[in-house]
Image (cartoon, rainbow, N blue to C red):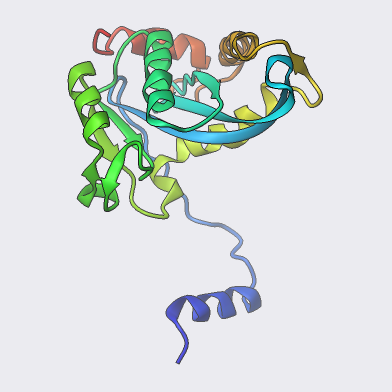
Length: 208
């Protein structure tokens, strides 16, 4: 009488983990896709009165893994579009598609390929020149490259206990650290650094 999910949970608790789990990593050609997501981090910002829960916007180019990060006070439509502007400016161009969650600033109703897009975001995408590609519901692997970055980057770009005077100071520091990190990190596809791979990918991005 239970659900299929409950059967899965029952078996998972009792069966040993497989020695090897099958993994398929999907790679994309340069300039074809970016993935975006929000993360949350509490950071001390003096002008905001001290420790403040902030929203971190990440946009990751799926090929090079270059990923601008910018912090905001909220996830409103204005912050969503402003974050896109800053990210695309730093990346130096526009990918063909942008994969998003089914959040209200991007999707009006439905999920995934059957989603009805947010009118404002759709107009923005048409003007800037990319196609909106909503991920399927509850499928984090549909945008696994940015999901991984949310865990890794948001937690490491700002040190525990670090303090900033203004939100702009924080974003300036995070931008510099993102670039420095890209120069150290190796891209798994090309074997070169993320930064050098991005320089090559930037040549095939659409002009902003």
